[in-house]
Image (tube, rainbow, N blue to C red; front, side, top):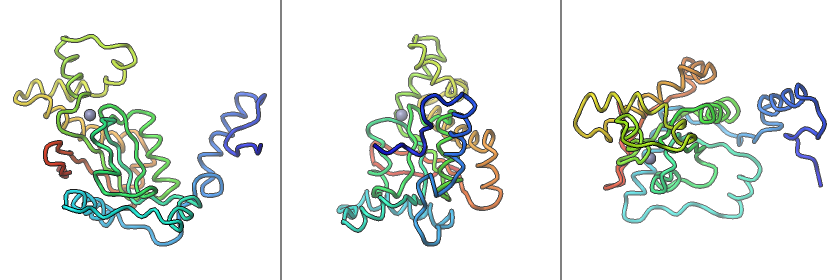
Length: 235
Ligand SMILES: [Zn+2]
């Protein structure tokens, strides 16, 4: 069996393991998935392409995703997604389906509540720095269960298991703000959480903030409506 280039041999000291891990992330196309050849989309073009995909999905006959032998071979050689999605793990909110996208087109990071936690930010840094992704969409959705849970926790009306409770911590400020604002507090939490997650990406990541400043990356927030299945950009 061949050794994995990303996995140092057993017995390496802790420092060597860390160095190997960093080398794996920073080595670029030689070790990481190589971006396909050809020009990259501009951020605005990537956003337009993404939204056109949702329009196709909403149409009567969405275009089938290509699964030809040639397309499969190209994907096996390297990935070049044109957008990254930070979305909720909700089973009804799969980005590849909502945007009528094929394998290799979207770099998708999902967790309950589309929270910009360490794993999500690190994954998106990889997408931007190593794959040249020009667009990140933070995608919340209607009647999000994570938002409902964050509201319940904020009202002290529920006790969650430790790991689930910790995971929802970043959503609590959004839930508290929505409760103060009144109205549909779950919807308010969803919208505030999208904005908060999108803002956090550049607040905590020099990689992402530098890419935005250089015009190589655009970050947008959006909401998926479960009833009409449309994705709408948020200001
Ligand atoms: Zn959700």
